[in-house]
Amino acid sequence: MHIRNYHPDDKATLLLLFDLNCPQYFAPEEKSDLQTYLDTESEDYFVVECDNKVLACGGINIQKDKNKGVLSWDIIHPDYQKRGIGKTLVAFRVERLKKIHLVEEIGVRTSQFTYQFYEKCGFELKEAVNDYWSPGYDLYDMKYIGAR
Image (tube, rainbow, N blue to C red; front, side, top):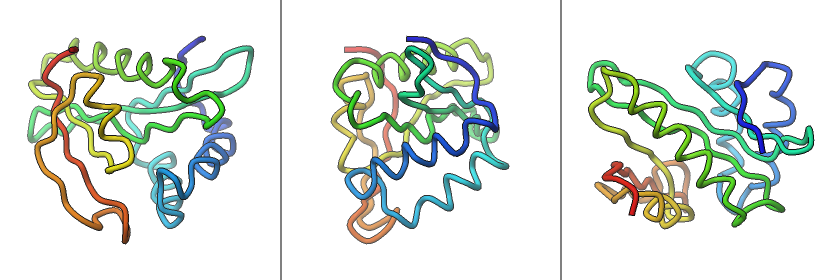
């Protein structure tokens, strides 16, 4: 398994990963948000490969006004979930954020479908908002408190 920086040539593959996780983890209408993110909003975005096959992706963004690092757009190929890839990708980005002196807090905004995964990675729930992402897709705003 190899984690590398995202390249625009990866975009079509990552959109396919999104489609494979839809509607189980993402609302279909969120796809345009991901496209915009990849085109204009990603700061550090990463791709996980194994045997030259893209299996996962996820990024980090810095909210400078809040001294906060945020994990963003985690997507794991469904055939490779529950194999430690997501946990490795989260740990990689948490460690990267810890090295940025500006960052005092690390967070992730996810949904009711994946928040328990982030709890296992050391995050705790701060707030939940019903139907935030789309009808039936709630926001779970979480803060990193350390590995458990």
